[in-house]
Length: 463
Ligand SMILES: [Cu+2]
Image (cartoon, rainbow, N blue to C red; front, top):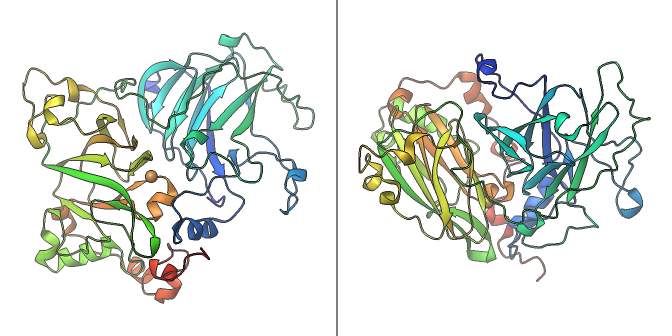
């Protein structure tokens, strides 16, 4: 949130074999909501007594860049003389892959390029999809999409410039106004240029293009689950070993503290003793408490650590039921999941998907529609008062966080952990160097961690 961020793109050896729309260049476009105050201060504000809304960003960045008019910020130390807009020089005769990544804390972004329509979307969270023409994409916190841009659709030639627009959906903010004359849209410059005719930053003529559509997204939702089809068909397994119903709530408890909950659990890390270390040591020493499958309340205090275990490589269903009015983009570390469904109201039941109760196989073996080739991704949104149904193969031994990717929600406790492959983990040991990291003084370890609830006790922020 404070600016230390960078992309990693992992290329598949078979990438070119699956290139449905060929492209000559590959660009990363990081989208980020931007706060003038530091995250430590914002988090204190969000977690303090009586606070029920997330801090709104002051503005937004593309690849860490934007410009502001410093005269609008007299109370801030502001110097924008060296600031510039993100710029993408594209060869007009070729296609260009833009990888949009929402690396922000809170806001959803709608991304469009002026006068570019029906741009193929080819990738969702690292999974290639059958190219789907769109005028733009909606990118939630943590999510990624690729689009293939080309000049041909606009008849653009060398020297033409267009605005790339990334607009935050402030309809999803609890408070609709941005602080300090904040702005919801950040722009980048698309310029068609050939390799030899690159225009310097100084002589760049800014685009004069207008936004094309009067239609703006106002809801922070994922596309319908059947909208994008994975290019490489991968059916979900028909049989799930585990099926977990998880209630998503925000609860106001003692001292008027609002915290995120998954079932009865509000996540707090033990910085001096990571879950993985405890699990590996417990399993190695044949402590029976750690060998429990499913929700493990014997080895972990589930009021703060909801840990769900499975053996290698079992299939796990998660049904999130959201009792909060806000939309929450949930991210699972270490896995891709199949998105089997989502919607408003209550989860309609396994039968709705042609699946046996608890996900134990198909109701009719001749009808596998729901699991034939669902979208795979690793961040999916459960809408306000709605549900999300995902399935994954827990074939990656370790401890994996599953959390709302809105930073303020994750840090307020909206997180749980999957302890996968407990049989495989029995043979592990924690490398000494890793263990040593936790041997530091606990006050040192807690620096930079989420503030403890106790510091707010008796403190009502003057109200
Ligand atoms: Cu959330």
